[in-house]
Image (cartoon, rainbow, N blue to C red; front, side):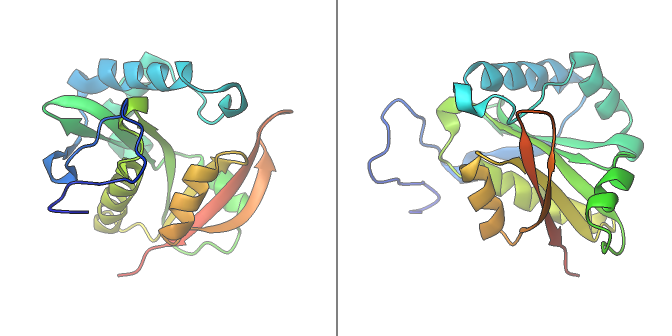
Length: 191
């Protein structure tokens, strides 16, 4: 990192190198739902065959419900560059926590789930996943959440390594369907 500019040796010239300091991360509103949905679809359309199942799509109406009910569903934060959404993350506080606690019974305190991180393909490699995860960790602490759970599909080595480098530990795994196995990771937030 040089003055906020990310330099990557051997970088693919088709990708966009960005200045992380120019990224605006903010809580998404109903005005952002179409962008959230479109980014999801762009990312899924660009998955390689072995990446199918990394992210299971939501309907646009589901994103609208989440945005309108943050207390029961959670919060979606967008990463904006020049007012264009280039990535987002969903911090879920839904009733799915009972299911996650069944996988990790020793969780103490409030728990939330990273229920998706989407980065446009042309902006990957800029550490946006890390920036967004750090942002929601700070937000989770403000909400009194002690634990964050993340699921990572077995073949998604990039996300797995990123989260492990950020202090997330593999606790267990489960079979999502006949083709998809997922690690369940946990990070206990301090103070």
